[in-house]
Length: 414
Image (tube, rainbow, N blue to C red; front, side):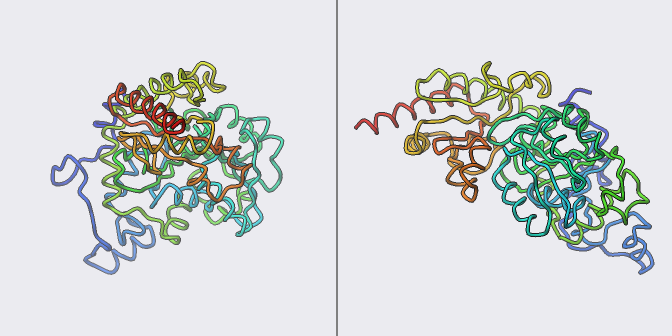
């Protein structure tokens, strides 16, 4: 099956008992049983079943199976947000005294999270650019995971997954990839060598801007060294499945980061149109980027521009597409604000992946708590504007941004 057909008719699409074409929303807190013996077996994981939505729910399971099928993973666990998914994945692997190697060009919220993990004794070593060589020279006896974004948001660096995976696997370390901005439509990181894939499903997977969510997909292929990864030692009997089992039955349950059934359903139905939306969004972003690149005084950052340092990865890893995010530098913060405020169709909002085009000044919002050095490592400057391109008619988007730039400059010149 092709991508669009797989989304609608793949093996993960459930046959629902009532004949529903979509999974029912099990909007309940708990599930009743006819006997205490049955409930005991469910709680002890000796029988399949649901007991309490914090630890499992049919609607969540339907969404998890669908993501696992798309990513080619052995299991997937959905969480209350993308940040919750990253937190759960790292805490399932690391404990106090352990180290993580991460790329510097990360989303601002992820940088804040890694700073919080320092307070728990989990240290992050940043690599300016996450390459095989940069990772290899930073691995120590304390390194337990390597984490990077496939397409970094908003710097638009592309992670060379095969190269980095080769370096980390040689050292017995798993590679965790945040593929939010790529989605399974542009790339399937597990097929490229990643071990664990994370998404903020609030973005492109949901697509409608109506539900927060996150998910962790485990390849089930990594051979864990249980002396090195002591956090997983109690789950040694599960072998390559140890991470998923600990994530689901320990970290996910105990930290309470479950996804609500309604949000799982909204993310589930968002998947139906993922391929169609990404085709349109990527085409719009490409056309808008080239149009803006022709305007004097606007410095555009988008992967399909031929002079982009990661242009080769568009074909190498990203299905020939550049994704839905572009940035441009306006020259000054004041000019950036004037352009943003002059837009008619692009909405000023902090999300990405919506059907609608969204725009923001990241330095004063998403990277408010980051240092100047951290911002610039992430491709964020005082004059940077981030655009999450939507599905509007491309001619309207190009006209909107072109006119906004002209109006902003006329306003400055009086």
